Image 1 (cartoon, helix red, strand yellow):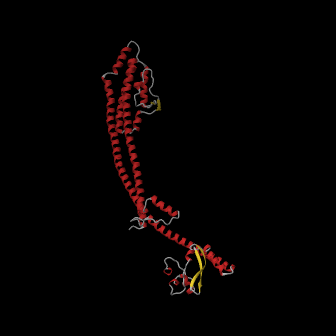
Image 2: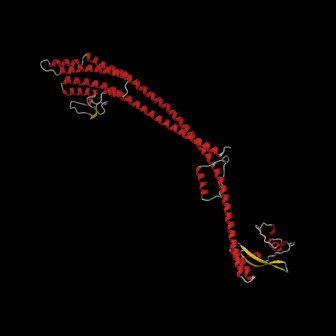
Image 3: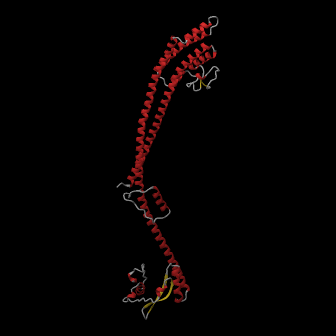
Length: 413
């Protein structure tokens, strides 16, 4: 059997273990959410890296298209666009909004822009550095940038030839067009794209590894989170069972019992189930029994005090009647009335001994049940069965006799 203190200690330990498990569960959940965000961050960096690498490739293609358009048409807007592409890539001019999306393909000869400027002036290489590009990847970027700068010198030279005037202007324009379409130019373009292609592969391996690592860590923590969740459920169930064993009854029943005692109802007994002898409900049952005993004693004391008060009141009235009355005929009925009205009796009667018949004759009575006196035969002789009752014994022995149970007392049989 577990003692009361043992049950409380067990419940306290179970509660602290449950709280500790809940704390671990909360920490695990927080860490799991953090890892899930890391996966999102890794995917976002992977996507951002692809966009930045693609922007470098796209800017190279846009430069080629602008310089060729300028050489063929001579329209100066293409030369301005060419220089603007370089300035945006080098961080000398602000980047348009969502610049990584299709932009220069939508800018026509009227120079209408698809999206406004973002007011962000930052080189493309710096954006790549912020995206977490490694040193090896930056080496490929440096190679692509160097090759692009070399090609830019060729393109500026072609644009200068296209701007020539005079008799040889047409021939120089054809030469400029050939410079932008010969094998050397395409070889230079390939020299730009090869490092970018290698950058794609290196970046893909890096970002894929980061995503896989984050996913693996999140999966591990997810299983740990599920395990701790199951353990927490088990601890909650165990704490509930311990609480039930400690209380001995459901909370609503225990509350109803306490409310009944609080309202002064001590008569309703509290049944205790087997095995719950040391529970809170058992303590409450013991308290109820003791309170019922105290209440019974209090009521008995109040009743006794009430009886004594009534008897003293009747005695006082009888004393006054003795003083006021001039004869027994006047006194005896008054005594009977005072015993009933002030003493709390149901009925009172006075009898006198008839010396001839040796029988007790009623001379005065008052109250309910006086019909009991009709034809009453009470002797004072000890050998007469009717003289062995309390009235005959009182006269014969000249002392008061108290009969506490008239119906079951052998003397009144």
